[in-house]
Length: 519
Image (cartoon, rainbow, N blue to C red; front, side):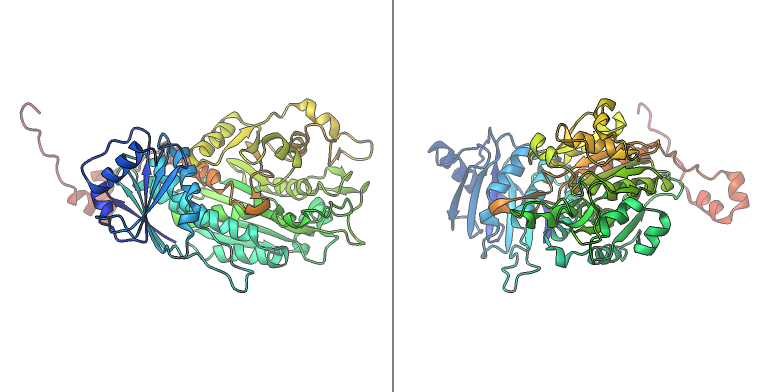
């Protein structure tokens, strides 16, 4: 989909030829003398329209308005949350077959965050999955104009949000694919495709490579399936090689049957979503390809299936991780932490500035936070605060949970260094405590997205979260790094004499103009 940002007041919006004009009306709307203002004012006066978030009124062929259809949409205070929820409420209008070109116009001055929310709301509302449908009704909406009174103030937020939507849709696409269309090999192929973009490199390792690395926990999960595992390493280099990278680790269980600890049959199909952590890493790199920020990022994806073959891992088995720690397997359905622990050990070789892992890890996190916020665990307060702030900015929320050492008591076992589960109480925390054992001295955060990565029921499908959160975090980290980097020194006459290029640059530099008296 193509997005454009355009300077539009209500009179100009009325002249825009399109299939659908969506007018975002906030609290305290002050009408002008134009035709759209008159329509909104009359609708509000007669209580046919409310500015409450999600309230809308559809009109057809309004006299004096070029758009075929007009939708007046209440967005409450007009902040990012109100705009996002309001646009989502208009999903049916945006997905109509007859709507190919739409204009979303703010009826009052809009903040940068609100504009970003409008872009992401449109993309989310109009997304259609088609990959495995024989007669799919593809998305018809192809161009959307975002109209604001002042484009200069929101251009950067608009451009960032468009890139985020590209990444989110990439993650949703791979998250939604059934397991036979998203095997570890196909996931690796998707990562290789990202390497076509500037600054991105990809390395894919197979079973032999992983065995040489000593990733015994990762290999143990994959031993019950016929699909060969893949360990995917992505690198985005946007800054000097001396700058320590941020490492993202995404859980890539492309289908999780639970293994020998077999899951119930009901809704097991949704276990194709167990690779949404990996999909989010792919989505972030797709967004980085668009944004090209000055930062270095590494993406690690341990990808495999968890199946109950005769060779499969059994409860009571003990495996040796890449770190050398031994793990007693009490439940084969707690496999995500097994593939992640080896990837976290591998991450240390990059001497990272920070490591963030993303995983659909525990049902306990769904019980704790539902589908609103992702669970956040962190060993570093600054990292935790940066992720929380990025989530707020991206409207992709998370919530920090504790990592007290007392929670690790349940992971003790008589037969290995650690057990892979610690019982039902505080299950999301004990899972995080397990992962923490494999983290070095670098700042580390864990995002449990089991409740936010996909939706069930009639709206079943991947959400693309937390791509927005992670991209905002990386952009903020990039901005901080740029601010901390001293500017290059200007060439002096002495260095210019030794360097003809520098000398030429100095010679061309204009002299400062003396200030006028009194200035």
